[in-house]
Image (cartoon, rainbow, N blue to C red; front, side):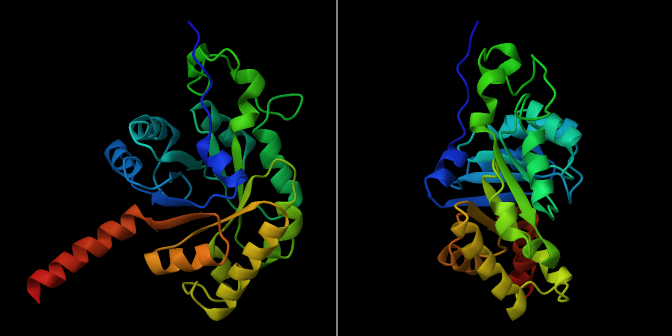
Length: 256
């Protein structure tokens, strides 16, 4: 039996310059993944860096998300070739690699996502990524639909952002506001004018390099602002923030 390859609509949209609205998933639950993926957002990011999400729990979340229309992206815990290999084999087509500081580290992320001779990704024939061996072309064309996003989140990385963005095989550069604010001396205050100025400048530099800039917002107003600044993939909030805000507001409304 042979099954057709799975395309990556998120990667195609970024290449076409079409803005993509996303939602962040930090709660390690297939039910939450399903709810978010069935929303009207274009993509949902499963965060395995700052959450308890492990690889064994990631697969059921991606399987649940397959019932919706939002594209599944995954942030591994680190820019590590072993972690990248395992996340890709589990079926992720879009990966967001944290704390990329240099163009060399960006190139390493790309290499880890590509099979030889274009990279160092280990070869396995019966993975979820290749539809358990039923996609007979997967090993030959996987790189066509793997989207590599690298995360710039320090002042030092910002100084090399043009070179990072220009790295062959990098599809987009994601700005991490929280870590960036800490690096710039404004920890806990990503809204500081210096941080926001750096974020706006980063979007311009990434677009000038011909790549897609991305960012995480925590509310609708910031999401709209970042879109106006030229960001192409914007996560509009996090599931945990939405839950906390809704619960606290409900209690406040009832007890007012």
